[in-house]
Image (cartoon, rainbow, N blue to C red; front, side, top):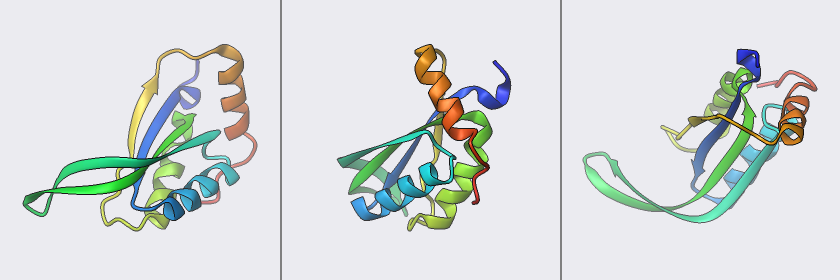
Length: 114
């Protein structure tokens, strides 16, 4: 499999459902992601500005190819309300072949605009 078509699952947390919807729609509409799952009511515990903080967030689970990572990161930075948004890519080692063909086809339809 060529490097650009290797699979990634990218995790991004958002502060609200509205911001998550906006980001997910932009990523799919611009063919940067084949699919984005929106998981509400995630409780996050993290270090921020020298102390332990907590927040209720919405988690995006983004399925794409490695070749679309930079476009996704640019879109997240442009649309995300956090100063330091989470953008973590996990490699997909194996996938159901028909599903993977659909992912590659979905993100290959046109170049992302962001």
